[in-house]
Amino acid sequence: MNRLGFRAEQFADAYARLTRVGNVASDPTLVTHLATLTIAGMPRPRSSCRLSRRRLPRCKARAASPIPRALLAWPDTRADWVRPGLVLYGLSPFASGTGADLGLRPVMTLQTEVIAVKDVRQGQTVGYGGAWRAARDTRMAVVAAGYGDGYPRSVESGTPLLVNGGARRSSGGCRWT
Image (cartoon, rainbow, N blue to C red; front, side, top):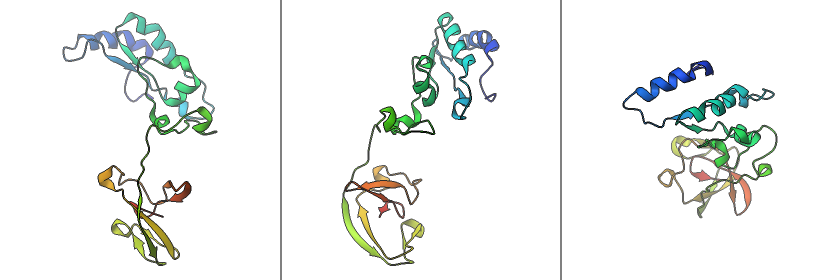
């Protein structure tokens, strides 16, 4: 990516300098990002993988594996630590297929109960700051969940969810249709 870090030919010197710094742990972690794996059609980035395999036996460093796409497509890129990213949510890192196709499942869910059902007229707003406006008369379920329960404020209206097994979309922050 040429933002942070160093090139393969700089590894030995950079590692030696790092291990001489007094406030750095004696067993630093080597991290590789493999940033081009998010671009369709890009070849496998062999240089980072070769660097890890060739250099790590000569140093005490642990290695952190790259993005989920590499973890799934090239198991030999795995190391001491992994960075699973979006696969924690059961999502596929590939443009084609789903997380379920890969045997992925979310590690957590948010479950709650409907505490009220409201009729909202066309044009009325719902949520903080009137974030959602009813395009038509709508029957809306209100659930017992909010920001204090860990539901993030950043989640926008329209986020998919299940109500009694049926697909629905959220409206107005924590008030879901």
